[in-house]
Image 1: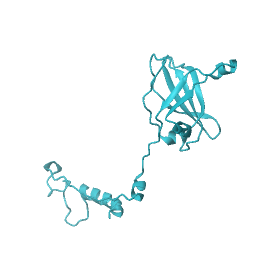
Image 2: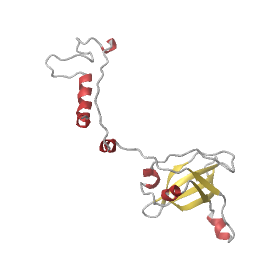
Image 3: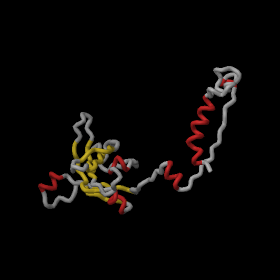
Image 4: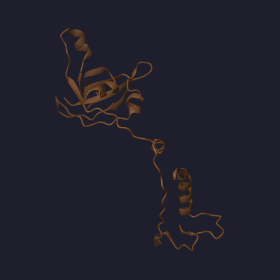
Length: 180
């Protein structure tokens, strides 16, 4: 088979929406997918207890992929509970037909974790200090500073700012409140 995985999250109306799809592992009955990094907002809308469903398909070139099974009622929280999560892949039709049916395979999820990415505000709240340092490029390619079309031209009355002055003032005004 040429398996791939699809993650679906439960919506507020109990329907499921596809949120992520793996790459296809060609010609494998024991596929190993590479590590996936899925934003929490995409995967579960930030709710680690939101129900997820994982579906496994056999890829077909014509786009009519063959359903191989699913894992129901899983969540980010349950994936985080143990180091190597082993999940039964269930084919509901086979399960309904046989009392002895256990699974159609096992999906093992190794090393599930949440990677935090802090915002600028959170860094500032955490005590980050900013020091503004400015460097100006005075190479000849910027033109003669005495000519009005130069990036370094300083207007005699100060009415108009050159591009460097505009950039320094714009960035400086934003950062000055954070610079002790």
